[in-house]
Image 1 (cartoon, rainbow, N blue to C red):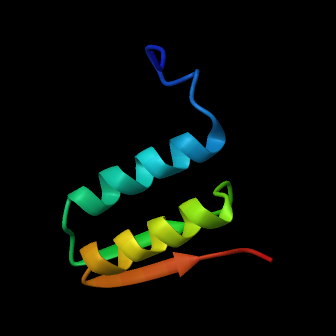
Image 2: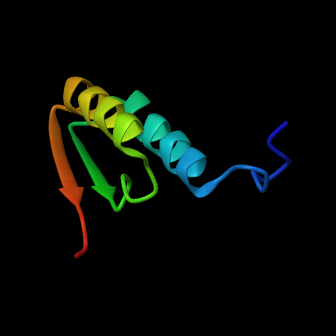
Image 3: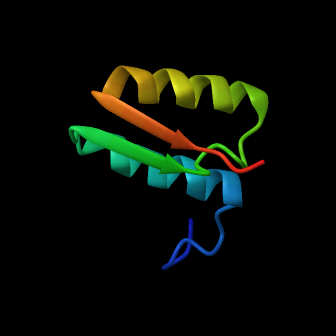
Length: 64
């Protein structure tokens, strides 16, 4: 159970869900703003690999 509005999801789980939704659309460009901030190193590696395979053009925004 994730709750009606996803309130039981962690920030990392929310991030992966939003990223999956964006990448499943197969848009010409995917802009991911801080999408990887809440991910651990293994999930970051997997998410980047998926994003690179699915998006034609990928723009990743990360703030220092």
